[in-house]
Length: 261
Image (cartoon, rainbow, N blue to C red; front, side):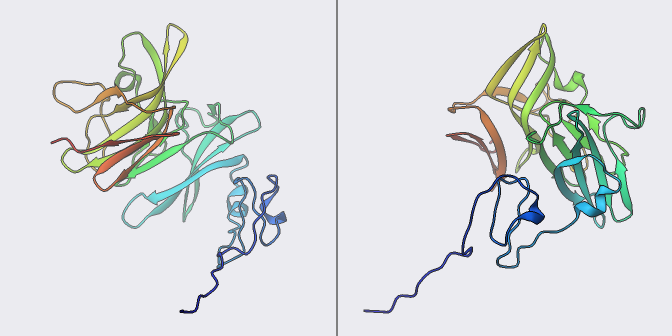
């Protein structure tokens, strides 16, 4: 009989604690996810909050990054204040700038309803960043813009009688034969002042090129935009692009969108 070697897990011990400041955690303590610190296998905490705290006084609730050009990497940060109002920031090697939608017309503008558990999704297509905060229309940040743009109502709220539409998530799907489209799911529509949630509805945009954005989400005879229900149990949570297909997930099921023939 051959010898057997004992297997050991990478982390020698783990514990789940209340959400205390990360620098107060022990070497092998872990919390609910808002401040995470690991001290095994070279995973370390980076004290980046000290650098941005001098300019961004509110609490960061979302951080993502990408190339705004081939050589310029930027971080995109969302923050909230004590009144659940939010702002967006861009961090580059030269400094930090406020890119909140509408900041050009009103430097003190905030976005309402921003909380720590806000579900924000982000996709980078070329040098264009697509953002969805589940409150506003889908947003995009162009390579030469000084602030984030909110998708106009005319191209997003195309349903008759609908005054606003919110999506639980928005992700990019680069279909092999159609090109880039955006896919949104778990829609909430406001009709005559009343909210109606469509948890298993998926909507996708017109195709667009790299460095561009969808000019409309409304179905026409000349584009691929559309909206439909999908057969899943539970509300749609998120989606991801993998291997030429797009996967949309609820709590229990996954639907696969394949390239159109």
